[in-house]
Length: 364
Image (cartoon, rainbow, N blue to C red; front, side):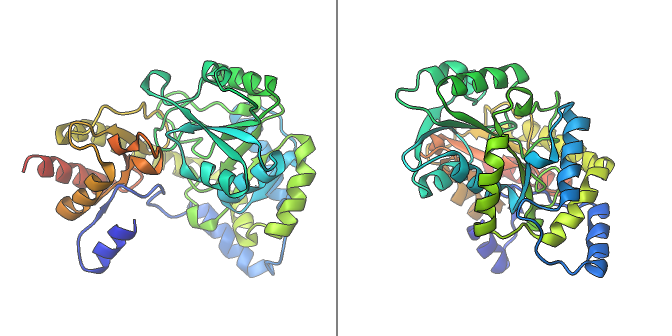
């Protein structure tokens, strides 16, 4: 992203397939709620766990979207999903604990865990497992296992875990005395079956979600946790000391997000069209096969027919085609040189133009 921004600042043309955020602003209802809050509210600190009205709105969302009863008392509103992961990891794990993380996967999991003294256990996945952990893989982990972080839909692959497999993973982890942490920030962005929540699998799981992706509120920095009852007070104490409270204006605005489904689902339909465009054009540029992009807004592509160094190829694509992409080494330090992530969260015009440029680059 930095290299792309430098190119743009120098007057170069850049099409962005590297950025994992929606190309649209927050929904109109959210922006209207924010404007109203600015007029009526002094925007002081809120409770460390968030505005009660927002926590209750999130609880109602779980009943309507998943048929799962979650009390508002188990919900902690956080400063983005990043704040949610930090709070969850600090509350659930101690220095020296061992937590498994799927590879390829979102790099901040392992970076945050490492920063707080937790040992990361890389769990290699492949196409055969849909790039997701399996109960059998959990059973093969030697030594103590204090936790597992999963994501469905996942970044960078877009792959998903079925409700049945979620339940099996929860049992496998809990039988070892560990806790399952489920990253569900891409829920709502799927291209077939809806994503299942790990809350249906066990009351002991920790769920992380966010207003950034489906709700298109990245810069508003707001997420949430659904916690087992025993971790609510530890998370509250940590949040009070680390953050005081989540952003107040964002919280007032986010209450309106749950009434903006029609607008947000329209964005998902655009993502679906972008996904089909790239799946149709990228193979002609030499990219693929792809991970099963069942959700989120990414394609994770094998680049073995083009190069064995995704970082070098990313620099070439930016320099020679004006297309910014993300090398697979961000998500898999060992095998990621053979892979590349393409984001299709942008506008239809940008995604179409990027695909055409990549095909033209390949034909030079």
